[in-house]
Every structure is written in C-alpha cells, then in structure tokens.
Image (cartoon, rainbow, N blue to C red; front, side, top):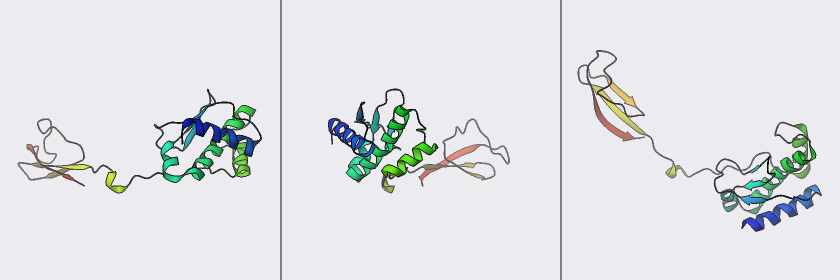
Length: 156
C-alpha cells in the first residue's frame, strides 16, 4: 500500500465511521517502532506504521486508523482526545476501534546477545562478572586490593 492509498483509506473510514471528512494528510512513517500510528496535534496529520500493515494486514491497519481518527475528530471538535478521557474511550467503543495495536515482536534469534566479561584478582582469586568492560589499570580487588586481570568474554 502506498501513501496515496493510505490517504484514501483514511478518508473513506472517516466518512464511513464518523460521518465527518478527514481534511489532512495520512502517510506511512517507517521510523515508527513501538506504536501502530500517531496523531500529530499541531499539523493534524496521521502517521502509520508500515511494518504493522505488512505483518498483520489490512484489518490491523483499519483498527489503527480508527483509533487515530478518534484522536483526530475529538481534537478538532474540542473534546477530550487523550487516552484517559471519557469522550475518547466512548468513541473507541462506538466505532469498535482497539485501544492498543498488536505487538510486533522480533524473533528471538535476532535479539542481541549480551556479553559477560570475566575478571579475577591475581592475589586472592576473587572472580568478577561484568556486563561492561572495565579498565584493569584503574581498579583493584575489593577484598585484598590486589591487581585485577581480564579472563574472558562469553555470550549469554
């Protein structure tokens, strides 16, 4: 779906569900990561998450658009447009828009694995496990104030 098709879809849903025209711009924003879409208060534009549409399809996009149109129309009318406002919650129920969009979780293999760095004291043998690397010239053992040496890094 292109930005022009998204614009037409938003205009169509606005007339169909709210009986009011959508007179601003709607487009995909590829930088959106954790949200399905957002209504811009200053410009009255609606940004949509392209990845959610690609992954879940047109029904998910429809729900996101209806949610953002609730923000849009309530804000234009000067009513409570925020998530906590009763006007907003009532309009969500009336048009059947979801309060939250579906989550787009990355597969487990793509998540970064954190390294654990192992250090030990040359004097008493105390072992230190650290998530961050440390400068062994700067620090000494907390037990005997001996010299610390780097042992290894392992992926968790």
